[in-house]
Image (cartoon, rainbow, N blue to C red; front, side, top):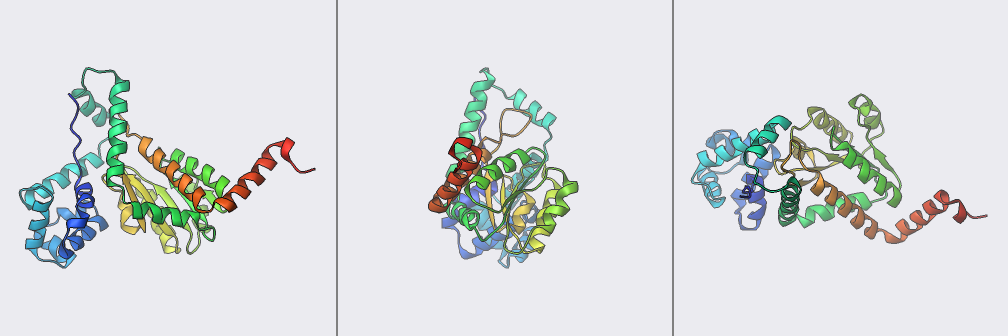
Length: 288
């Protein structure tokens, strides 16, 4: 029997964004600014922080399918717990509910559900805004990731370097981050990959980059990294898999889609750059 995929409150809000009232949109913005902690305050505090009435909070909870605010908060607490799951707890949870099918089939099913769920909830305007930042050759692009996601940042940096100049990979070791911050200037773009069991040091790095005038772009999971509160654009993606570790399949897919869109945005310049790069890497094509 296949495990039911539950949508997070953040995903439900994005699905119903077009149906929300002005007060409900204020509540969504307040929650997203500090997700999910803002929603775990009392109903009065949550309403006051969003500058709306407490009945507006109740109406939003019911619009999202909850019986009331306590049920709404119960789901947020469950999401917070899911955020903090370590690999052993993840393995035990998946093993207990594992169907009698091969791991390849279960993993493929989870990957396809992650992709379809992420695409269903993807904000195309946010994606296009990220592409516009990456394609702007006046900006220097810096790419950073955590212990696991650094490989994704490296992959994206490698492809962007072929498509445009002024692309830098932030080193994997936090001890080298001050040098990267030193080279970060106003209007630069810092793309950060940060998925659950978020790295507090990565939040500090992103906050320091923003203080230097950089624009932060976040690629995260359905529980939303705290970096979202300082990012100009966030792309939340589904990452759960029948494994002790989360899946990077959808983040990799989005990284490749960002490369394709960035290349298309400035194709004549990119084509010339790739041709020049080919002439440098292929001795037979170098000019005599």
